[in-house]
Length: 129
Image (cartoon, rainbow, N blue to C red):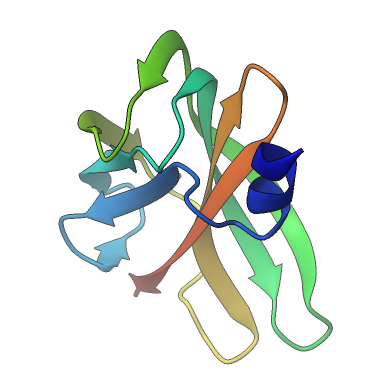
């Protein structure tokens, strides 16, 4: 019961973070970096790691497009404060319009555990012309 309450409040849960080498890119560039997974106070077993490139309309806050950037299946138990790094590379499409006040690009990263609990991270990037 205590474990469920802590999860709902995001206390002591495993944390996921996509760390990118840079935040500015051009169409067709290779995006590189790594996923940083840090264990919380409880041991948790990871089922998979997913990352999508989202194209978002800022005016009405709607996702215009979602493209899978990475899906990594695994069975890894992270212990108390244990940390792992997983390399990330993604080739941007050639047909993206530049970032603006109306269009934003971001990576949405999710870590899914065996009990289907999820942790999330958002990382905005800028597409230059």
